[in-house]
Length: 550
Image (cartoon, rainbow, N blue to C red; front, side, top):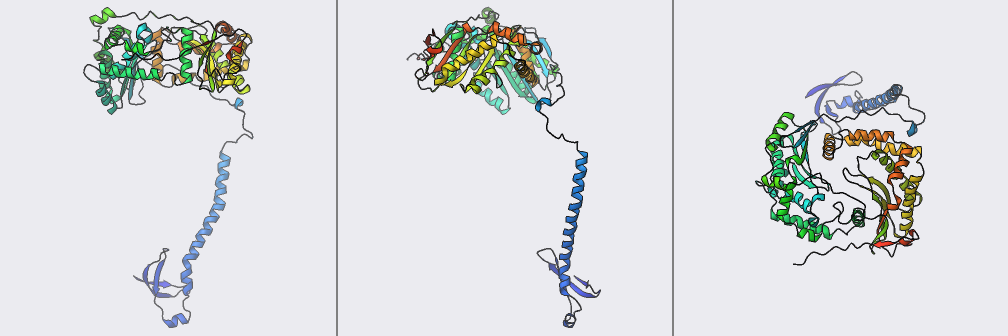
């Protein structure tokens, strides 16, 4: 392509486009005669330097723009931002707006004709639905010579599947849909639950109902569950903490109490499939079940689905004849009124210690004040941590816990882990702190800290609707008022220094404190007998009774 090029003198010359250089500049060919070049009509260097001059000009303008405009922008932003305090405030001077009032989400409660109680609570945040059933049973109701029966029944109820679908088929079906159906057993209740995507609700709920109503209890799954239980028995002395927890409960409730007895090889051997079926028939009745469902569902359709799957459920003639009362709660009383006990484990270089006695129930009028008392003793800011661990350096871990139950006495337990040679001073320090809280009023600072610890964590009782619904089910199951948790908060707010000392004097009983140590007797120096002039140390044998041969 031909054109003309104008020089600085204003003259023009024929020019031909040749190409583009690697740096992006244009390469031209100018037609000049040798005479014109010799006479200096055109300065070739001036043509070559023109692009460089333009780039330098752009750089100068860019730098100048930055030096002038950027400071102006920063100055403008500074004048628009709020003025910061000269010095940061101490955390005690910070103020925050009050938290919103906590409320129980709306829910519906109704009862089927067969006595089954239903709770429905909508939550459309995610396309999920979950359900929990509480059954009026528990392993405390199993026969003395068949300890482990209730847990086996709950396990095989799920793993064994139903009359129409095996447990393995059920597993595969649910896994493909990211769903679940589970069953379980505790000391005071049985449980069954499900979770599913909203789109799979009808199918998964149908399987859940089938598991609850028609479990098959196949022999093979029972044998598998018993094998797993035998493995657990063989490993139960593997950890000092496991030994301490198990044996401490036996010392408090008694080794034959339904709240402390343990599964043995002999009790497993005495359990057959017929025993699982019988235990199920005795307690899994519609009138013994509370079912709560929460999630993304249409309440009208959900109610219709529940009626379709559970409305026609009636006890069989066998169930009616063998049904057991569920209100006969086994009593609990303290088996050992004090004493020092040792589980000798020569291989250990530290001691696991538990000190305590039977406690109370959650429905005690002093439950709130006892929680505050516990807050003074326990936690990172509590007396035990500050004194026993931080100041005296006697413990790796140290704690105290008032642990009430819903319908039978719980426990008060203090303890922790310490070096073998620090075992005796560790125990003495815990006794001293228990005596101190009984005989000396707590400070107002300690009271405020303990109350704030409880009250500031209160909101975590309402993290999601499912948690709230589960609590409502428990309250009805154990006969508590629906607003019990709010009554508890009011009780904590009203607790005074005098209340803490009163409940400490009333409920903490030094003369009934049982002390259990799991450690090496040879390395515990001074020995446990040095705790007092008349201390008698009782050895506990944790040898596992062997399984029957053959």
